Structure formats: C-alpha cells, structure tokens
Amino acid sequence: MLKTMHSVAVGSAAAVLLVTAFTLPGASAAGNDTARHGGMGHSAAPQSLGDLGRKAGVRIGTAVDTTALAEDAPYRARAAGEFSSVTAENVMKWGAVEPQRGTYDWAAADRLVGFAKKNGQLVRGHTLVWHNQLPAWLDEDDVTLAELRKILHRHITDQVTHFKGRIWQWDVVNEAFDDDGTLRDSIWLRKLGPGYIADAFRWAHEADPKARLFINDYNIEGVNAKSTALYELVGTLRKQHVPVHGVGIQGHLAVQYGAPHDIADNMLRFDRLGLGTAITEADVRIPLPADSTEYEAQAEGYGVLLRGCLLTPGCDDLTVWGFTDTYSWVPDTFPGEGAANIFDENYAPKPACSTLRQTLTLAAGRR
Ligand code: G3I
Image (cartoon, rainbow, N blue to C red; front, side):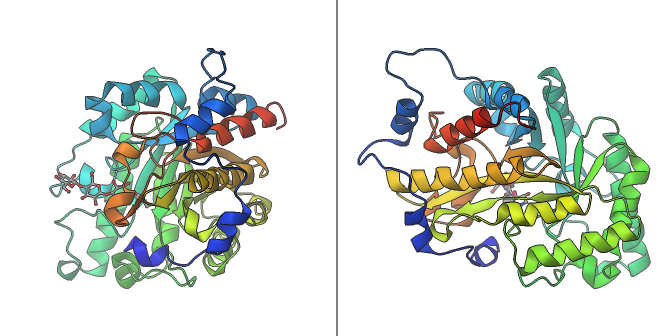
C-alpha cells in the first residue's frame, strides 16, 4: 500500500548528491557519529535528544514498540532516557484496543502511558480514525450508515474518555487524503461522507476538551497537491469552529527521493491559520546495503524535518517513528530498503542522530 503512496517523489535522485555534506569512504554510520562528537578522548555522554529539545523549545519523541519495551532492556533504557514524548506505534489503534466488539483491551496502551508518566514524557495518542488496522469485526457490508456513525462515535468517545487527561495530542484522523489531494476512498468516506472528519474532531473534543487534536498524514512535508488539499480542509474546519488544533506531518522520507526543502513554507502556512504542527513519524529509509553517502543524505533528511519544525513557531514536537533499525516497519513494507532510524541495530548513533543533536544545540534558547 505505502509503496505506491510514497512513490510520489519529493525531489529526485540527484538531490541526494546535492545534500551530501561529506563522506568517509568505508566508515560505519556509527563511526562518523563518533568522529563528529569529538570522540578523540572525550568521554562525556552526549545529552539526550529530549534534554537538547527542551532547551530548543521542542519535544523530541519516539514511536514505541511495546513488545520491545517489555522484552529488550537496552531498548527500554533508550526509550526512557533519550526522548521527551512517546507515541504508541500500534497499541492504541482500533484493532488493538477493541479486538472483540464491545470488549476493550487497554492493557498494552495503559502500560505505555504509565511508562511515559514514570519518565516525565508526554504521550501522543495514535490514532482514532484510520482506514487501516481496524478490528476484524467491523464489516462495512454489515452496517448501515446510521450504525457505522454510532459505532465510530462510541469508539472515539470510549477511547478518548479512557485516556482523558493523559494524552497530550491525539491523531484524531489519520491519512484521510490520497496523494492527488482527493479524500481517500475509505470505509469512512464511502459510508459517512466527508463530514466524518468534522464529526470525529467534535466527538474527541467532547470526550477530552484539553487534548490537542491533530489531523495526520504522510507525503505532506512540502507544498504539493496533498498538503494543499489538507491546508484547505483545515482552513474550512477552523472557519466552522471544528476543534482541530494541529496538523501532523509524518515525515516518512527516502534518500532516493531527496529531502523536502520547502517544508518550512508548507508548515508556516498552517501556522498562519493558527494551527499547531508536529513532525509525527520521522524516518528516512535507504536502499540496502546503506553506504556512508546515504547515511549523510539520511542525516540531511532528518535535519530538514527538524529545521522545518524549529522554523515554525507552533511546531512543538518531532517524533521519530522508532529509533533503532531493529524494530522498524520499513523492511516489511519496502523490501530491500531499511536502515531508516537514527540508531542502528546495536544502538550506535548514526550521522542523523548527530545532525539532530547539533541542530538542537544551535537552536537552544532561540524560541
Ligand atoms: O500484532 C500482530 C501479531 O499478532 C502477529 O503475530 C504479527 C504477524 O505478522 O503481526 C502483528 O501485527 C503487525 C503489527 O504491525 C504489530 O506488530 C502487522 O502485521 C503489521 O502490519 C503492523 O505494521 C504496522 C503498520 O503501521 C500497519 O499499517 C507498523 O508496525 C507501524 O509502524 C505502522 O505505522 C504506520 C502509522 O500507524 C501511520 N503512518 C504510517 C506508519 C508506517 O506504516
């Protein structure tokens, strides 16, 4: 599915070469990072991304794989120590929380929220209305429009109420658009019509008036048909006083398509509408095996996303979609590609990690 969606390239293969800062032939990704940290005898541990982010006025978060959190101690230590917000990668999705109709299973999601509280992290809730990872019992052919509307209302109300006061930002509606800027042909659009989006925000707001409510999508980093359609939609929703508070820009990039250098232009137009923004799912995949040039291009991709956020006053979070290549979703969806995260399988930081650290350090105290 995502293969075709992400094939709309933001740039070209040539752009990869243009953004390559320098390469150390044969050097490992981690080796580059050590060199940049001044690893020549300096042993002080770098500050966490979360701490650097605090000084720069932005949360740095990660999506969390809760199975890894339970089973992998080094993963747990990084998730706790490196980040200042967390997102449930899968366990707050509808199929996970209501596997049988009317029977909720909040256990895994509750554990993550507890983990975040213990570590002083905020939680992004992901996600309430999506076309994917729906419960198996939800069969479009079996429900009338009126029933489906009731089912969606109940789902949003129950889930937001369950987590009331514990979720900072909700991805209320996820991936509602196609790349050409038309609304996605999903169960929601087919059965309920485009009004499902406003309804979802109203219902979520009723259940937790303090949570910040986001619409979230991919391939909307730069100015393009999809981001413009989203811009027009949220402008209309704001005029109608629908409680939409922010736009989540996922940030799933690929080095072969270049980096979205117009991201600040795009983010600032949402800012001018009075909306918050966030980079919600950053990763930059690479055709395997990855070489040092590609790791530098990857670092540029992460850097562009972070700079877009820092240049946009209402952007208060950059979340990476997982932090180690060990648990990345990428190889399953894009066979032959991977190495998309800021730490490798051994938790060694890549150049991308240095770029985030350096950019945050330079931005300290500026917003
Ligand atoms: O939970 C089952 C498990 O019971 C079973 O044994 C196993 C066998 O394959 O599958 C498990 O489910 C997998 C699930 O992740 C949890 O690990 C699904 O097969 C797999 O498809 C699912 O992938 C997730 C994907 O969303 C689904 O579309 C990825 O982990 C997750 O990173 C990804 O996240 C999405 C965001 O929510 C929205 N934006 C795009 C992003 C990347 O695709």
